[in-house]
Image (cartoon, rainbow, N blue to C red):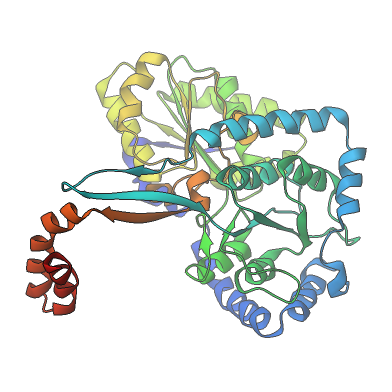
Length: 439
């Protein structure tokens, strides 16, 4: 198959960013998603059930929306031991990493006798969205639930689309038990996000909704942002690989395929140092394709969104480093794979400003982070890594400032407060401190 090859000087990263999500399609679905949200807000469970029948082909009563605890327990007990063991190892690593992210409470003296500080409180209720339909992702259950548990969230509500038989894939239920969530509802799509954001007779209203989804889920999250917290807008998955001269063409090809096999909209881009290296990567991809299960998806995504950029410098050259940084920060990729030696990484990494997650060296492929290294795989896409972060523990907590002042502190700071308050013509503000000092 053919993959587009370009010289780095012939494009701007802003052009590439347009390819990472179909903005026109997102705009088209906004109107229909807005109608779904209005309907769920007005009719609650009845609307959710209607859309589940319409989009998923599944019909059940409101009493069947919630997954019984016995079904969750049975799925866990009947799961393959090796899979449960792998999920538990991944969970433990995700826990360790996100535990380290927990913010600390603190207090500092700004003026003698005045000690402002910060206390941390977890959100009360969080909704996690786990995609279904085309494929099942137990790893996403871990990535969305574990950080919330670590943060101290007491009620975690999971939604995921049902299969045609009205059930949830057993391994998804088993992974939910491993992660620590037992409140699961069989609903997906925009109607699931709406139900979580506004609440229905059966599904509780939550404080935040996290987790990846399709264009309808993304549209619903964007429309409901503000009414409920969201993690980040999500588009098709993407990777940018910076491959040095010594990078294995086979490894680069596998890293591109690992990203492209998600779906036909996935984006896989690699920056190489020469035309000959680009050709080697293409040859390796063509050699790999016949042996890969998702060959049809790979061919569709790589032909549509696969790209090889020839920077044309060596990894030791300052020009190469600067050009690689321009490409990285311009695209702001979801995943950044630096298939470089340590010297080149040391030069380039300080220049990287925009990326959802970074993988350093050929021995750190993206799938490590997708599953079990401990970092989160719910990441900003479509250039939003320029302003959004990966899902993390702090997404599930509130920062509450507190102020403690002694009588001495009040006296010391009162003149400043009084002066500023009276300048703004808020005399009650000024009197609130002045009268205390007089007393």
